Amino acid sequence: MQQGKYSLAYDMQELFRFLVDLAVLKLIEKGTMEKKDFIRTESFTLKLRASGTQKITNELNTWLNKTVSYQEKEVSWNYMIFLKVRELAHYLIGKRSRLI
Image 1: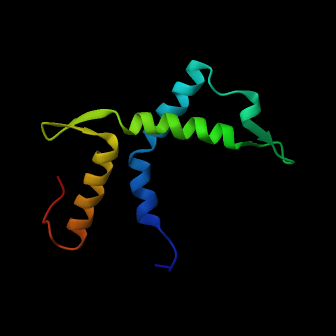
Image 2: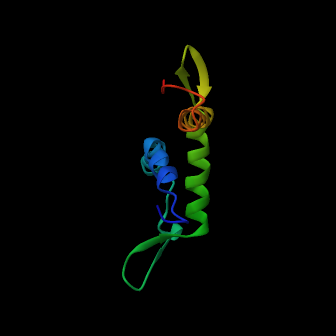
C-alpha cells in the first residue's frame, strides 16, 4: 500500500454517498439551485461556485441530522456513520471478533 492513499476512507464514504445524492435531488426538486451557482470552465464542464457549495452543504447537514433506527435506538445519520466507522476500526485492531 502506498503512503498517502486513503482507500479505506473512500470506501467507507461510498456506503453513505446516497445521503449526498438525496440532498442534491432535494435541491433540484425544490428549485433551489440556480444558474449563478455554477461556473462553466474552459472545457465546458460545470463547477460549483461558493453559493452552490453552501446550498449543498446546508442540505447535506439537514440529511445528516435526520434520524434513523439503529439497534432499537433513534440516532442521526451523522452518528450512525461514526458508529459504523468505530465498529470497523475495533474489528480491524482486534477489539471485536465480528462486524454487526
